[in-house]
Image (tube, rainbow, N blue to C red):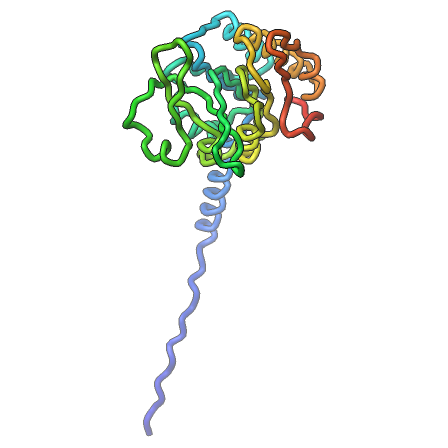
Length: 262
């Protein structure tokens, strides 16, 4: 009589309890590490990160302004990073959302230009501190993310970044407050929308021209207001007005006036 072959059965191997515990501990460690390095605040110190990007320092420095902003923010518990002149690069703007800043102050020469396409919004451009040349950032120039920036009466031209570069920049802003200490930041909503779409909470800027020393003074007052727990709407409305060009300081989106900088 032929004996039938027994079918071999496969058994699932059980992990020893000690291995399962190790896996759980490692998973928890990964999660804790991720959140430790990806939060805008340090739970142990209450420290919040702020950045000042000052490419305007090359042609119009204001050390007193920087010292006062640094002191004010540091006393309020912020860890402040200051990028001066040539340190304000295209690469910095590209990675800015991923650097975890709760507050960003942009002190940069700003220009705007109407689009030839009626369907396209005006182009807003922040000047970097990098002198312009014809061969770097070829792809960025082709896609309208980077442009040549010129300043009347100044011999050096600079690379300038548009809202299109902010739209494709790396990471996401951690509900950041963005303050544009410069002309034309809100000449149109195009740059503001790029920041908001990338995670920022609110964007504050001037709609037209403004002298740099006046804008610096207004930014200091605005910061004091925000740090005294005023809402965005109250902080902006209680900031000095521009009487030289009639520029208006405002914020975007309009429904974020009740936000408080925490």
